[in-house]
Image (cartoon, rainbow, N blue to C red; front, top):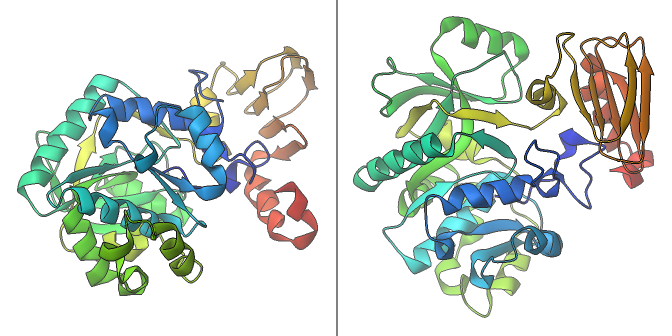
Length: 350
């Protein structure tokens, strides 16, 4: 899935080039490229499908030039993950009614490829034999309200699938802390494993408002009329995630506790943890020269090699040197600052 707008990473991530196409990971590769290479370790290249927005066509092909045309699914507009996953699974069902699907977002960093591959292949084997919706669950490191939380209906034993008791998408920070303290919850990694037929059934059962827009998909998907069909159905498609639409309602969701090193770099707080780099609690990603004095608990990101960054006396701040925007803000206020982008006068900066 590579069609997100990456608004929480403003001002580095912009509408014209959102975060999945950016290369501020430690590897120097874009998020999309890293996701593609993870998939290559699991399935043949001809079985990898990328779903993105039509307007990001050139950006996708620049990062993944080997992507086959029939495996590039372009949505006319962003309608969140329920429609994205429906589109992909209906396309896959036209090829193989028994297909087992691994669904991954393209904005994550996962270290330990061997353990990741082992976990996913074990999950795919289980999903091939059982009509379940599997989600990978990560041991939480903090009470983060930006993630989905999975409550296990039983203890983790042997790394196998555990029945999900509840699934809560993006709780308040206070509720997230309650979850952490209980020891019963995992972060939802947003990585799913299921048969294409099973998720299609549950979309129809639990999200009829989404499924109704896909009437006739068997006739139009993978045909010469596919583009016309998508442009007709997408404008009125509900904006909803697969988590809200299906996972919180289905009775056949299970989780596999994931032990590989996982980072969902969905906002500046998560990037702060990812780049944490010195004994004063700073997270520094500066490609040019720097002069830093009395800096504590701050995130400083400056990708330009021709820039000198000089800072003194900052505590718990975020300093982001974007191409057109310089953002300097207390860490605990950046979410409110970014929210102001919804105001009409700031539209040109999105």
